[in-house]
Image (cartoon, each protein chain N blue to C red):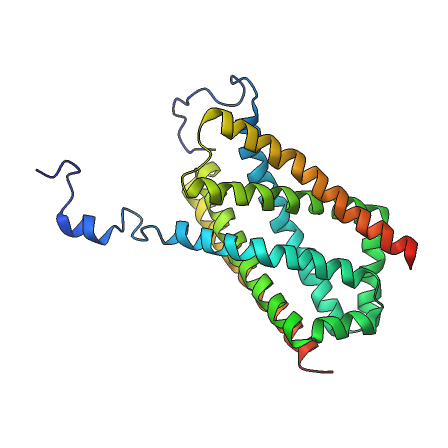
Length: 128
Length: 131
């Protein structure tokens, strides 16, 4: 007797009513783990940037190692921000129209933010 | 607001405030604050990519009293969300759920976030004083 009233296939797939399973949960933790390391590195580079002039700051971010870590940081930041804001909206916005509008707006804005950051970092890293 | 009013369970107005709920609420609040803070991150990166004039404007804003106030707020938000995030990952592994541990870790995270913020700003002012 299946106490959960689900077919064995549904249990095996584990996708649930949202058809996404634990994907959101897993990616939120994965980006969080990445941001523990990248966040500490980000604090370090911001403290370095504070006492540099424009040319020095440009040169520091243009270093391949820093540019790659910064690309990883902004990607993880906007991905994690979208996942987090999605849960907040799901929890507190109960009108279907507003919920949909906000979820789409957050996804669009996070993607635009990530794309703009990536473009800026590439422009800095790939030369003047 | 829901489209049709339904009965709700007693919420914030009726519970006694305790560290367990405060740390949870602050995790969300600092997360939202940090998401808003990404606007400055994007603006600063675009300014650095576009030239000294734009970068100078961003640097001037960060040095103004409003900029400093926001940066102190974002420093603490990052410190808190980072430490409490590590605590959440620890809990995802199945640890720290006994009430005594939960309360103790909540205080470690809260006080630790203030210490981390103070350390970062000590570095900022030490560099400024030394330069």
